[in-house]
Image 1: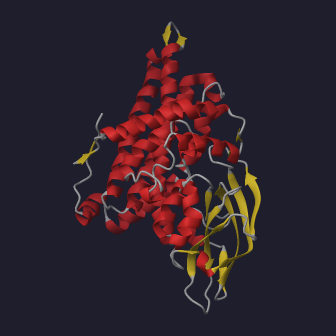
Image 2: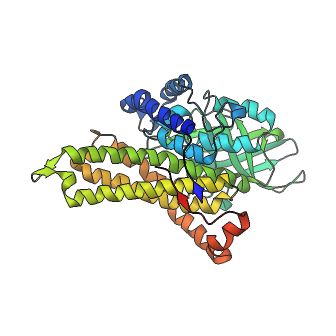
Image 3: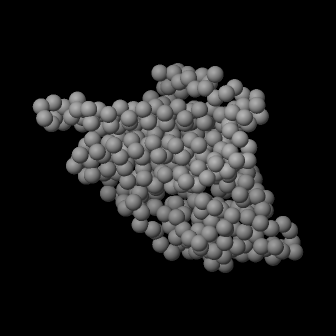
Length: 412
């Protein structure tokens, strides 16, 4: 049996996080520096300094780098609290893509790379990007990677076009995926590199206009034009990029779920408050079955999403390989939470599509969640393929990992 009782210390950390977001961060939601392309670097830095002063910066990171060394299950509780505002994770330095980049760098970079590229990100002094997605190649199917790296024995020369590169504008730590071509000096294949932003050959062509605006500096189109990197720019081993990407993506899918759960819960609260005070046909609209059923389904979906998040985090904490489990969780939770937010707009009526409340912003920012780190359909395709090859989770997972059949008990 999985016991999700929360320790007093964790409950206190979550409560402190929620209070910090409400008192210190929500007032910035109407700041003009929250632009169509997301928060500016200046706004982010101001928010980061508030989290630093509150001892809530990068709490998800290992203690080695200044974090609190939380487990996946503990992170789920704190990141949900941070997500009460879409700016909360930005302030606490646990937003995408930095959170996922910090995770993978902590797993595979060398000590010298950690000092140069990881620690400044953990400390909130600079941002990072993960440059994988391509307009005609890698995305949901990274095997279509077209960006190439030519190795001459001492340097790699990288050429290719990337897009939807979140936070590219102004980022200092760059993780780049490229295919090392066959050469006489060593192995080849999909590979990760790490370098500094502003290195000659990194050309940010433009920032794309998108419906979401919760990621710092938006999503960029980036061209690598004869980007020349030394051999020690390798991140991990040549040919291992897909394996490293999966190491990053499985927990990153779950931290998306954690953060957006907080945002959806806030939208739900706003809708409930409105349903209690707005009247129609002689009574509060929440007393009408049509509205009460919408709110009831929201409550159900939030509960299911929270339990599925915690269950998946628990499995990851207990040694279950996270790819299959995180695909199940991410595909289901992203769909449920978007529907929660959509119902909140419906309950609010006309003001739900205006900026009179934050629900409109949450709705727009929530919609791309169904696409982040793989659209729902790709996850279902992967789940179905695994079923055809290996059977169900109950045939494979518990016996293989020595764990009980996943049964969830959550403490109220």
